[in-house]
Amino acid sequence: MTNKPQTIGGLIANGLVVALSVLWLVPLAFTILVSVRPERQPITNGNIFFDCLSDPTEAAAANNTTLFGCTFTLQNYQDALQVAPWLTHYANSLIFVIGTLVVQLVTVTMAGYAFARMRFVGRDILLFLILLQLMIPTGVLIVQNFVIVRNLGLFDTQVALMLPYWGSAFGTLLMRQAFREIPYELEEAARIDGANWLQIMRSVYIPLSIPTYVAFALVSVSSHWNEFLWPFIVTRSDQVRPLTVALNKLLKTTEVGALYGQLMAGTILVIAPLVILFMLFQRRFIESFASSGIK
Image 1 (cartoon, rainbow, N blue to C red):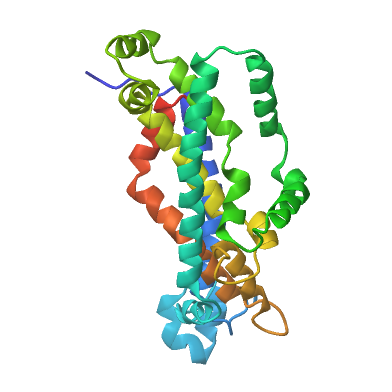
Image 2: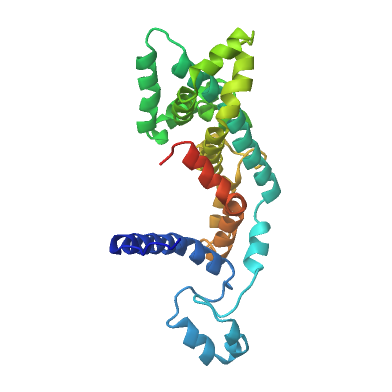
């Protein structure tokens, strides 16, 4: 069986995909290169390649020339690690994203089933109001959420970080669509066998919706791992603040301003877990999103 030659439109589409992929990688490549660049070398200083060759002090390092510098160094990472207790911030971020996800899985499952299978007065109106939250920027509700957290006495706690995200309009819609695609006859058969609601969810709906759960978990973990504004507002101590807020300390390392090598090194430390996770489970990521109907 021979492969059909690609059409001109297909070649153009592939070229655009490659171009967009390269464009998307430029900021990441810049971050990595600056993070391993000595601070004494300015980011822009004429033609760096020829400057390194012409400078006698850098002649020995000319073979290590990169696009943005003459030599590689890990000193920026060593300096960045001394600015903040990163292990504590890593633990805080893990508690934040995992704690939020665990509660979300419960709430979106219950809400998704209610809107998919149960009939009650005002169901469509309530679903519309919930989905309306998808069009409201999260920053609009920061003041109201902050007042609620303060009145509850939860300021500067892990619960304050997670509380606004325990309900998810996106997750509710996703699980509703997943549960509606499951044949209702399976639930009826389980009820005839004497299964209660929890047993039906455990034996019928949840096992058949695993790809959807995985897709939602990926979205939830990535979005909350990168969350900055809300944790910055409701936390003050290093014992609670996640990685994204700790990264702000690298902007105040000197009186003259940020050291960009350290700042880029800290950025790599923050995004590295998500990048490694994606590289390890790339195929499962794509399969989960495809099978859950996300386009």
